[in-house]
Image 1 (tube, rainbow, N blue to C red):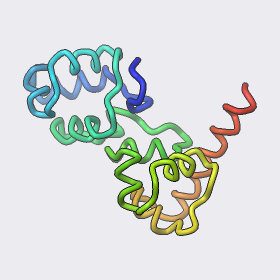
Image 2: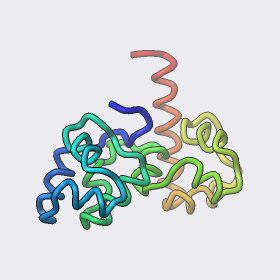
Image 3: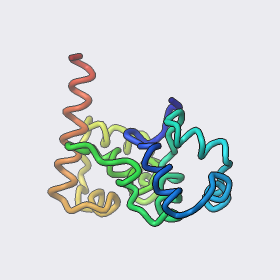
Length: 147
């Protein structure tokens, strides 16, 4: 699997949605500004799309991005951002902060002072934002402690 792609992406669902839309891999590739080999690798689960490609695929195929990459039971801010088709850099620009600040916030290392603005940037209400932030914090703690 390639690094940096959307975690939880389902290639089988991409294939199903593409066929439902009556598109070939080549036609879908043109529509999303990609190439047929990449679409084929995505469908086989050999590659994961970056958030921006996930957004374009969902738009062209007229499905929710969460159909192609379902949210886990306890989504983190990163999960929410990726399903919205946004990169960390885009969130950083929208909030006027560094990409590093976005990363540490998504991992639950730091909580932002202006949480309502952050919640809006992620398309969440404040309660959902705080829950996703806490899930990121818990996931980071599990990785540090181990299983």
